[in-house]
Length: 241
Image (cartoon, rainbow, N blue to C red; front, side, top):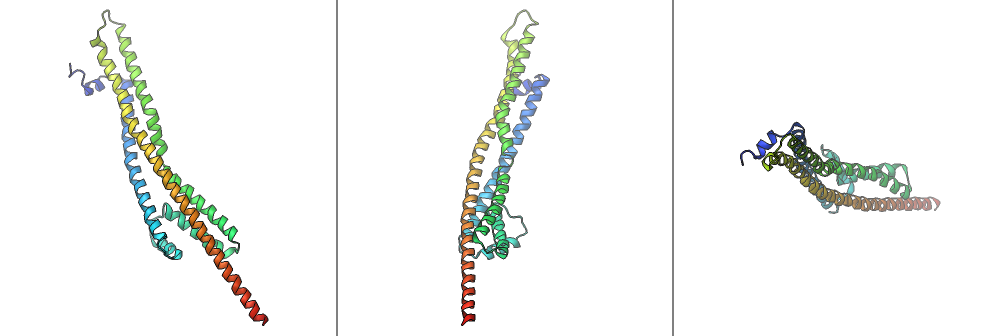
């Protein structure tokens, strides 16, 4: 009896539609676990890179040196480094063409906002797919279960004496579809909730850094403008004397 109701035998003897449902859920589970491990590695690296760059940024190093060091790297900048690179590059361009600190600040904030949006998209990539797997897998499994049970009870209409032994295999194979749906959905839902929280906190760190960095650049611009104005006034007074 146990041999007849083994999981492998039940799957192999299931109807074609139920087998297709099981195959779909198996593929969804494999894809889900691939995304879980890939996303874990990506978010862990992004968090470590953000912490490392924050330590470097607040260590007192000159901003120009940090910018030059980043440009020397052949690897593409991502995360907080990309926000810094975009903001500082815009600061350098604006400083050459404008003497208004307010205009410079607005230009810098716009450029960093675009960079933040792109980095957020990278962090959130494939999260929607995890959410889709987590939300739809139980219903797909339930569809296979309902179909299998319907087939079992339909088959009973062709016999005069129905017994539990006749219905049990069909119901058992149908319930496997539900189990596989839950097996695919539960890890995906847990990972999605966990990773969505990590992404939200990382984006918050990026936004806080962008605000603080913009403030620093504004102060530097105002300081340089004040110095330039002072030097110009001094030169005018010297020429008048």
